[in-house]
Image 1: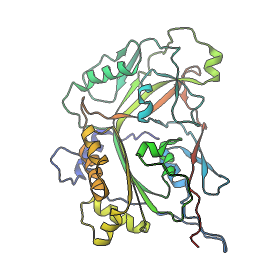
Image 2 (image 1 turned 90 degrees about the vertical axis):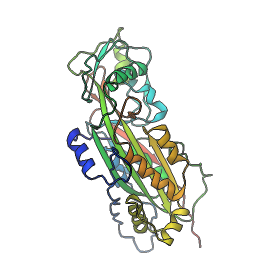
Image 3 (image 1 turned 45 degrees about the horizontal axis):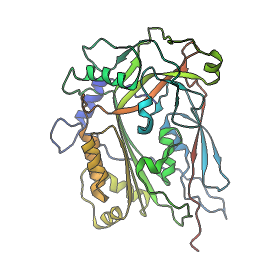
Image 4 (image 1 turned 30 degrees about the vertical axis):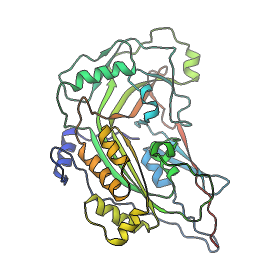
Length: 382
């Protein structure tokens, strides 16, 4: 995932100007119409059945990594997408391993690209580090004697308690894409993720399907601030290091973490994708649906992934269903536009530096990521 380097003040003003929320101020309401990029379907060779699954190159671009190639499995519907690290990218953090991601955390970089969770190293520790933050504050003491998850939280509390509420966020992203199988959403994270667990989707029995439903995924990413190690200071380990081990395992340390909120909403129905797009546009603008549209949403499969939002906000969406779930998703992503010491989001992305190669960024440019997209076989209804 690429960082969004948009000036905080300008971005915040733009969001405020474009807001149209009916809730009380001061929520930021990023509610532009959902516009699904057109899907260009290649011509079908006579006698060759059309593939109802979408091509994956468009979704691959959402990872922020460069698309290299697409390898098709023997089942003809599943794929392995090979992506290339281009430099300047950040890596996705999931709730399952966020406690291992903090400035100064030491990990094995060798396995990045085959699995999304980095392997933490506990045998080595850094000497005291100095961290900085993108938050405008008077707090200047960023010394962390022993880098750890809790030590980083303590530093954040010192910074965030300086004000009751922060209104300047780093960036905001809102977009939507067509999809045809939930496992395609692995590409959003640039790695192999258990999508069913992440979205709370009951696992299927692996049986073939007879029809592929139209799907739209709406993505909202609000980056509130970044915590990063002071680049002007040298990095030293407390103990002597095994250089051979460090080189072979690509030992690296976390040097920055982006905090914020991410919301993903997936909707799959029997409607055509253009009709589904119209429905989402209406809901996002609080417009009423007609009878047919209401019936389509009532029978749709709707799931969400929410990370970094308030507990009450998440629960309101997760317990809802149907149209109510979609409406509450939009209310949530537009209503939490500020942050504070008690509600500042979660780690969403991080970056690494190699611990032996003059502290160069890691992964290096050209590092390969292999993302597997397993999809159900399709059987004919004839």
